[in-house]
Length: 114
Length: 111
Image 1 (cartoon, each protein chain N blue to C red):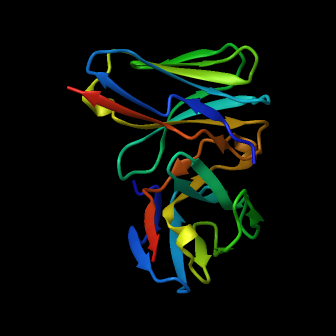
Image 2: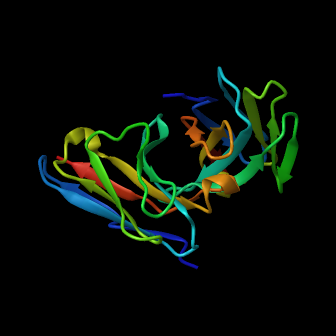
């Protein structure tokens, strides 16, 4: 049971480089999310997609873009990486906002920007 | 944005001891969730609470939805080494709203 799969697991970037974090879920969930986790800050929502074809900003969207490629996949792009974007990134999915919010998380992507 | 105040930030306890942690908010939440994150993994849902005053158990874990709807508590009884990890609370105002997470409680258990 794969659940939520995100890649890469680890990445080191130089300031100004771009990269895309990939995420896929096999649970036929409608909603998908990208969070970042920083020490002592808990999980903060970057962007979410309530359903296929829609995306919305979360709490900390600056410096990121997202694409809901299809129902399964939701990617996060850093166009010009900055050291402040060094963090652990989690993709997540849930059946749908109207179905309650049992959110399932991926294993995380550790990103370091130098 | 809205933050949940989770305490303590970290705990270092002896195996077999009981553990208590809590989350408080200045505003009301209608759903409280507790997650555990193992090292190198994503958070996993432990307990979900949907009603003020609700007390729910999952094995050695017990969580309560505060009467005021502004707080929630998680207790772990007879801790074991595999309880090590970061515990997060999360609140949701209404169905369809995003979750707001607490800062986490890092639990360390000494065998």
